[in-house]
Structure formats: C-alpha cells, structure tokens
Length: 361
Length: 144
Image: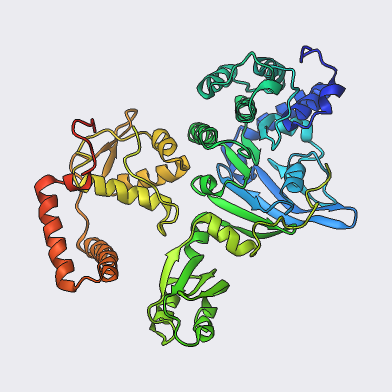
C-alpha cells in the first residue's frame, strides 16, 4: 500500500498524532496554506515570538462521565524551555497531552499553541509541532522511507537529509516495514519524523517507555543535539526521571488530575532536602517537632534514627534547627528528582494512582 | 571530546555550577592548559547528557570570569592567563571543601592532627605531580 495514495480515512483512524494531524491538514489544504501564511508572518518578528508562549494550558478540565481526570490545569512553557510533565499512571498526563495536541476537546478551559486554540486550529498548528506519541503506531506496513515521503509535503520546513541521517546514526533500516522494527527502532523513527519537520515545539509523551538503556541514551542525545542546534521548546511527559532531571529546566507534577507542582527544577532541588538525625534520643517523636518549620513531608523513624524530607529547606532555618537541643547533630542531604517526586506524590509509589483512570482506550 | 568530569544529579549544586567548578578545577590543576580548545556547548551537553542551555550558562560565567575566552567563529578556549580567585572567594571555597573533608575525617574516627597530617601529605603529592595523584588508575600508555 502506498502511503501517499491511501485514503485519508484509513490513516486518520491511526493514533499517531503526527499522522492524523497531517491527514486532517491534507484534507483542509487550502485552509492550511492560508494559516501558514498567517502564522509565518506572525513568527517573523522575534518580539512576537517572545511575547506569545509556544504552549499554554488555561484551566483545562477533562471529564469522563462523572470522573474528573484533569482538573483546571494551567501551565505555560516559555520559548526554548524544556518542561517535564510528571505523574503516576492515571494522574491525567495522557488526557492533558491529548488536549494540548488538539486531539481532545477539554470540558472546560483551552489549550493554546503559539497563542491559538489547539482544538480549533489543530490542522494548521500541527505543522509547527513535532509529536512523539507514547505508542508510535504508524501504519505497520509502511517503511520509514515511505513514512517520510508521506509527511514531507505536509510540513513546510521538512528536512529529509536530517531524517535519513538520524536513522543512520540510530542504525534503523529505512526499507523495513514499521511493524517489523523493534520498539526502540520505532521510537527512533517517531523522533526522526518529528524532528525532520523542524518543529518550533516538541511534545513527547513518554517517548522512552520500554526502551533499553542504550536506546534511551541515543534518544536523549539526539534530543540534546536538537536543543543545541535549534532551541526547540519541549514538553516531555515521562517516567524517566533520571534522564529528564539533567535536561528539563521546569517540572510539573500531576496527581489526581491536579497540577500539584509547577516549578523551576533548580529552585525545587534547593528547597526539597532530606534531613536526618542519627540519634533521635529517647523520644524520637519530639525530635520531629523541630522539622516542622521546614515543612516536613514524610518522616521515617527507625532504629538508626529519624529522617524526613522537607519541602521548605533553607540554610538559615536548618542551622537554627541544628542549634536547638533536638536538632544537634542533624545532617542534610540533597535529593534526586525521583526522590522528590516520590516524597511529593505519596507513599505507595508502586501502586497506580487509581485503577482504570487512564482515560478512554 | 569525552566528558572529563561527571555530573551528579544528587549533588546539591545546580548542574551549571558543577560544570563551572569542574572546569575551574581542571584549569587550576593544570589538566586543562591555557589556550586549550574546549568542547563546543553541543558536544559537552551531549557528552554529559544535560541541556545545552545549562552548559552555555556555565561557559558564559567562565568567560565572564576570564577563565575561558571565545575566539569569534573559532569556539571556546581556556584563557591564556586564567585569573586567580579573589581572596574572599578563595577563603569561602577552601572553607566549604575543608568542612567536607573534616566531616569525612571525623566519620572515620581520625583526630584533627591525623587529618591535618594527611592533608599535608596529599598536598606534597599533588605539588609533585600536578594532579597526577588524581588519576592513579590510568593504565600506562593510556592516551589522555
């Protein structure tokens, strides 16, 4: 089956955002051209770019029946930033991402891409947005080269050379059917397709899920190269906290549909620390009282002493605690993003947040 | 270039500061000699798996401080005469690092005299080999 001659309806049924977007925009080619002319003109001035954030969620709410999956979530990405969207399974990440991509209409609020409503202007906006979906399910019979040939006319800044170059670096054969590639190779094809369109905004939905360490590393190296070369704005929903904490400059945590955290990573790591007392004395319960001014989140007591994660650390307050009778000998250590995430999102981290909360399938 | 120093996400210092201080250390120890070419922001960011903006910030600060110099169109170099730290900066850095060492020594059960003696002995080793003691594991003939 040749992709370029495929009826739009068969492809539109697929769940690859890049493809469905492309097909829709193909169907509305006239509107696309007019839209591109407008957005192209708007993008021409650097001032306009700086003023309009590439992505903004304005009080987005998503409901499935009586259940609220996303509850009035607002967040903004500034130009050139890398935003890590974190949350346990069922926290509402996928629903929010679908709204941001204009694939789902929020029950309330709106998603703005480059200042324009993602739902209403999806077809034209998607020409500027690279998408790597959680499940890259391009038509399984199509080869990477055919996929590229299909996408090329739909994106004004398509870079075919960069596409082939990336697949070569990743070692992905361009003439093998997508369905026969490994999961890692499929992820690389999805990233290469997204980047070949030279997008101003990249939206990655758990792109490294199920990839091995080597494939993950290659994926992030390619992403880093793209950031260096083009300053692309990135939203990445991920569970790969160790990789993303080196790259993101801001993080948001979704829990139960609420954005419980939306903060610069540097500040977050400054204020969230672990404090421990090797010897809590005869009454460890009172030792904890000293932590309270530092906003203790989770306190664990054991034979070895007592430790807690605090969310409002600062040097002066900690020294005051050390100088108190209870806090003598207290030590402080910093935390990784993963440790902070666990401290802020609850104790039973191995359980999904709520069963069946992942949205419609 | 392969990254010559590690970045530790559990280090309380921001990543850009870790890069900045690592480069300062490599320059001060003589491992990075004056006028040596530095890896590009892109290369170093990929090597360390960090955001290029983070490396750029560290490079900018190092350039502002005169440790690195930019040659237009030709990349970034170690300055021909990297500046010494101010007296106040030197005192602060020494105190912070000494605190870490003192804490470790106390944990091991050493006395202040033993800790000071070990420091003096390490200083002599360092002065003799200009940092050679830091790479004792390098096999002979390993190209650096």
